[in-house]
Image 1 (cartoon, rainbow, N blue to C red):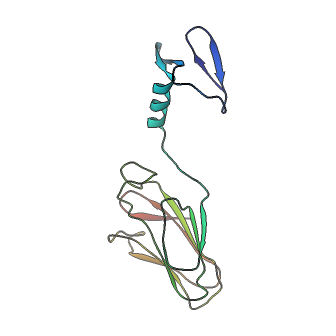
Image 2 (tube, one colour):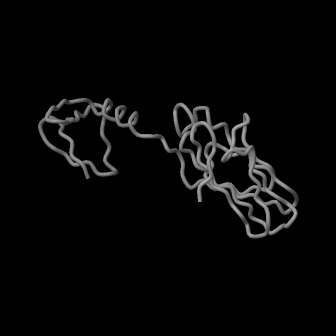
Length: 158
């Protein structure tokens, strides 16, 4: 719960409280204060916070796919043959960062028990995954890979 000053009375904001464009918000920092409109306040806050978009987005696919900006987890079934998941360009703007895809995380999981059919994770524009152009998920233990964009390349995380 946080407070804001409408000029004459103090109101509490809860998570479900709307702030109208005409409301005045008192900003106090280092002993200085200033009133701004609710619209300006909302715009200022939005510009300071990253836009994380949808979370927990899971797709189950049985064909080769490009990983989408809105994906979080891509579960690939390679029962009928080898599959490829292509990561997006990590150097261009996305919904996750206005300049690059820096900080964007994807998990790709092989979700079948076929011994001979791999899931290959590839990159675009010769970008790398820990210095490699691709990464292969193979075997029957349903392996997975989680990568994070540095804005220049993809790195793996446990």
